[in-house]
Structure formats: C-alpha cells, structure tokens
Image (cartoon, rainbow, N blue to C red; front, side, top):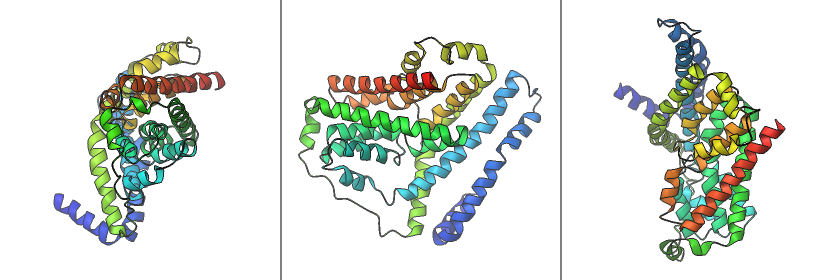
Length: 351
C-alpha cells in the first residue's frame, strides 16, 4: 500500500497537468457519494433510522468523510498557494505599513494562512521582529485562525455561500477594527522586553518561491496535507462526535431556549463565555455549529460562539503571555470579545 502511495505521489509530481484535473474529478465524485453511503451504513446496522441513535450515527457517518474531504482538498490547494506567498514574503508585505491599510492587508493575508490561534503566535512574533506595527500584527493574529480558508471551505460546504460570505465579512471586520483600536491605544510598552529588543534586529530576507516547478508546488500541497490534516483529525472526530450527539439526542426546545432567536439577552454573552475555555479549530468546531443550527439555534449566537472558540482560546492566551504583558493581553481579549458580542447581537436582531 505504501509503495502504491509513493508511486502515485511520484506520478503526480512528474505529470502535474494530468494529476490535478484527475484528482479534482475523483474528489468531486467521492463527495457526491457521501449522503447515500452514510444512509447505507446506518441501514446496514440493527438501528432504526428514525431513532436518536440512528440520527446521530447518520450525522457522524456523513460529516466525518465530508469534513475530511473538504479539509484535505482546501489544504492541498492552499499548500500550492503558499509556494507563491511565503511567511517571509508576508512579513515583507506588511513591514512599514501604517494603520488602516496595513490592518486590512494583514487581516486579508490571514485568510490564506491555515493556522490555529496557537500556531499563529510564532508568525505574530516574526511580524513584530520585521517592524510591523502592533495593531497591524493583531489584525493578522485575529484573522489567521478565525477567517482562514479551512473555516470558509467548511462553512461553504455545510451552509452554502451566503453563510460563508457572511462569516468572511464579519471576521474581517472584527480583525480590522480590533487591530485599529489596539494600534490607536499605543501599547507597545506592554510588549515583553525580549520582544522589543528583538524588534531592533534585522528581519530575514523575503522568499518568493517564484522559480519553483509545478511538481515542487504539488509536493508542497502533499506536505501541507500531512502536517495540517495529520494534526487536526483528532479534533475533527471529537467535534463531529459531539455534534452527532447534539444532533441525535439534544431536544430542539432545549437548544432554542438557550441559543434560539427568542432566547434571553444574555444568550450571546453566555455563548462567548462558554467558547473561550474550549480549544479547537475551525475543522473541529464547525460540525458542532452545524448541529446547533439544526436544533434551532440563532445564527448570530452560533457565530459568536464559533468566533470565541477559534479567536479567544485559553491556550492562546497562555502562549501570548510569553510575548505580551497582562494589560495588553486583557486589552486584546476585551476588544475582540466586544467585537464578537456586537456581531452576534446585531445579526440576531437583523436576521
């Protein structure tokens, strides 16, 4: 089996123009079989399809390969994209940018970096070293985990383009505005001393990857799949399992009373407070979001919950403590939480 995989990889690198369209066709064909395959699997088990367990199993059998297919496809594609836009080139693009335009550019670049909140911190430090303004770096730090291509691909696959576009606009707005506010506060003195000392050193030269062949770019796509999907698949299974339990067993009336459109005013703050201690990424949280919305939860409340899980995780704050002093961490968390609360509340009122 391993020999076949190595031979296929070698062929893909040597014949990229044949491999890419063929791989896309196979991916699409597999995606079309998900619903009938999941129903067939449940039907083959001694479980009634209409039962709570039957509904939970169908959700799990359908969502697990769907999320893995979406994640593998988009990560492979972005692995190729990253050969054109390297971290060093990203730092070079942002160096010397002022507030405003720099925040928009940093938040937009965050879309093509499939990092969780914790793995975005090293690149955040690299931006500071390159002389990127503090507020601009925070726009990237917020956008990279919250509005990356993985989140958008999964949202598009599960809810359609309107919800994916809505999340894109909201996430970018939170990242840009939060970065602007932090930049205007002038809190550079609240960086740890070693970070400020590091800012006086010279940043590494930019690497463009412009001379790479397509075979090398495809190999980069395979490496991204191994590194990213290999790390997040336990979160995916855990998130889908929890989502399946919610889908199959949690009564609709209960979820509507907590997170529905007619829920009390504190439902959005409660969703954000519940989300912060959790630690997962878009791949892990979106199946839970899908199950919550299927139970009648309001879109604004669910989006607020999702944003807080991805952008304000407790492990991220612990890692940031090595870089930022407590006052700056508290300001960052407060500004981002305020933006998320505003997003959730406004959309619950409008939709």
